[in-house]
Length: 390
Image (cartoon, rainbow, N blue to C red; front, side, top):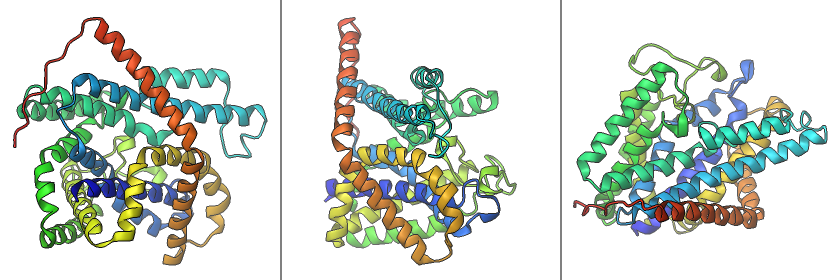
């Protein structure tokens, strides 16, 4: 059951990402038409969903893989993010060449901008043309760091978490660029290692129905009760630190390295991750049809993430400009319809683009393998993993 629940967990995470992005045109940079209901739904999910993505990845991770395999898989994810972003930029270039970029709600692009974007994504890895793909290099580096720490022991993972948090604080204070997502690695790494260390507990929980229900319900209550109290200031729980693009509101955004009040962020992210993990087990045990659908979505989560990132950049601006101002988004029927349309659009697009996405992954893997082979032929060696503690 636990293996199926991991797929369901990934499915829940990608569904939340898709729906959260679909809500954005109703509360991001909307001014007077800011929609409180859309914002509150997004804020609830944003308070824990990306940490949960790292957490469930840690649950599924096995330290027994060689470090070379971890490096190859990490490079593959990075090349996928770069390749998909460059494909997006080529689309915008084509729209610009045809003189229709403004009609498509896109900023015109030149070849100079295209190559500047490409260089920045390769050299810095801080901002991607498909902005939602920040998660891929962050997960890639998290896996490599976890693999390195597993060669030493659990204390190394603790030290790494502290070091990454210190790096976040220093880079924030000094105004450093978010080089290869360095400002979010602390949160991703801690969530990932928590998932890895709790794998035995997860397997045990899969056999205990009542406890699973209790954790799911308690986790939901704690997440719902605390998410709204994060006012945005890292070390001041009472002061407000808000975003102009959210009309003076705040919401957690790992993409923007915005965690809000850090103790509350950690607590809510932990509660939400435990809730989603337990909910995954409940769905596998009791929701046959829903479980089957979420498992398929979870197994296809990488393709769906890429497609959703593209729709976020290419479709959301059109929705924000031409549709959102003209629709009354005031009731549950609207949000149910928005959810259904968003899911169908992403699933259909992922199906249509599946050959291209498969090719992208294969090419990225081949390039990564070539780089790893060059490194190995150069004589670099890594120690074996330390025995896992249970």
